Amino acid sequence: MADWKTPDNAKYTENDEWIIVDGDTAKIGLTDYAQDQLSDIVFVDMQVEVGDTVSAGDSFATVESV
Image (cartoon, rainbow, N blue to C red):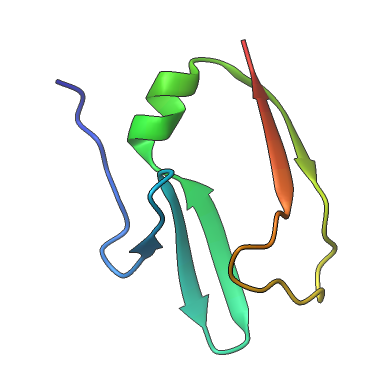
């Protein structure tokens, strides 16, 4: 089994994404499990800019893997 690391203070989705909210700023990511399942991530298309507001359920990025 892989030695997966996950942020302790994050909230997680059912799709292995995580978010850490600090005031009006958020960090987002994929769990180590999701990254392992995706294999090689070759492209990430961010569909928002710094300062944009994103609500729960909104799509904000596309990840491409091979």
